[in-house]
Amino acid sequence: MDTPNKKNYHHGDLRKTLIHVGIELISESGASSLDLRKVARIAGVSHAAPYRHFADKKALIAAISEEGFNLLAIEMEQAISMKANSAHEQLRGMGHAYVQFAITNPSLVREMFSGLTIEREAYPSLYDISKKLFNMIETVVIIGQEKGNIKKSDSNELTCAIWSMMHGTAILIIENQLKPVTMQINGIEHITQVCMDSLILGLGAS
Amino acid sequence: MDTPNKKNYHHGDLRKTLIHVGIELISESGASSLDLRKVARIAGVSHAAPYRHFADKKALIAAISEEGFNLLAIEMEQAISMKANSAHEQLRGMGHAYVQFAITNPSLVREMFSGLTIEREAYPSLYDISKKLFNMIETVVIIGQEKGNIKKSDSNELTCAIWSMMHGTAILIIENQLKPVTMQINGIEHITQVCMDSLILGLGAS
DNA sequence: CTATTATGTAGACAGTGTCAACATGTGTTC
DNA sequence: GAACACATGTTGACACTGTCTACATAATAG
Figure 1 (cartoon, rainbow over the protein chains, first blue to last red):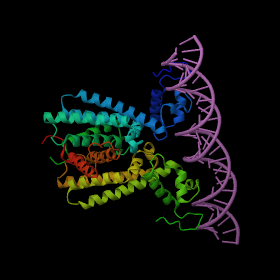
Figure 2 (tube, chains in turn cyan, green, yellow, brown):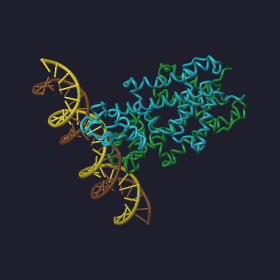
Figure 3 (cartoon, protein in one colour):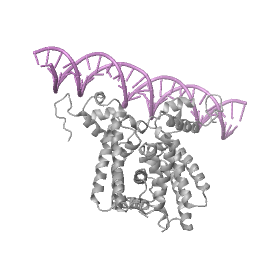
Figure 4 (cartoon, chains in turn red, purple, blue, green):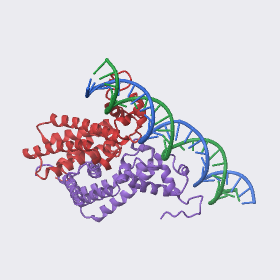
């Protein structure tokens, strides 16, 4: 897909290629072991070429994370639009999409949320895209509130609760922390449903 | 505290010292940049000494994670016993303890949940201690169910939902992902409360 | 006391991120 | 179209890292 369209020098769009090779490598080996020189090798350029496009390794990881958020946002958007007529169904669909994305790209998700987070503000476009995700969720909440299916507390706060539940479920699953409960794929879908339903309906005795 | 009790050779309890130095270093710099040689240097031994106690860097990280889970378990236990008369209060207390621990030790928590998770089963004692945490939560659930304050679904599943909410809240906070909503410390305590209450009471319009 | 074992040291090696100096295309301006 | 500046890519170097092997020393068992 990323055609190195010229003959030798001047790769075409090396920046984009490096990001995608990086995603590939992160998916295969672990995340912390992302190897800049290997990325360059696979992209077919010399070991110092990436420095023409990224200030350092962290900058490449930031770009990779940003691409990850973009991919996740696409999945979420699709999940939301598939169940347009019920807020509760939208919430469940979002949860499934989020967890499914994490299972499909565990190392990428790990890096998106733990790579260089201390200095997240140093990468504004990364910050922006994650804010966009927040807004997507909040929109669902607000519409649900208007239709009377979601209670009318502060929509910002409810969005935090929803994102927290989705994220916690996804992370604990990919980190094998819920192993005793979620042995098979089926168990994973089921437990995701349980988590989202617990949030929607509450834990209290009815 | 960790007194190198002999004069030179034979450090005393190097293993424990390495773990604690490692926790210190991880807390200061990032997690992924844990430097084995630096750990050895600070512990006052040669760069190869750690290899008498840990097979490789991953093994040290596993030991550090394990210690982290131990510390977290202590905090949780305390939070649970402080509110012994109400299951809902116990849940809120656990949430606060979990989030507070993550805020106090962000890099450690990051490493506990994303360091070497793919091969978690290669470190059985690490797996055991995290299972212990799961059981602590489940005990609260079961007792709450007996008292009629928590609904009587599968306690394993409810435990997953609770842990997911606590974990998601903690991670999103330390990763600055809820920034717009949680500017100050006060906001953090508040949003933790909101998340736990949303789970306890549900999102639905009442 | 001596021999074995546990623990620590010294030195080497390949591999990594990063930098500086150089090379080669691309595009602009007269 | 020629001369130039700029963007992009290459080579070689450097300090540093994880890890291995061979050696040194302390603790302990017989």
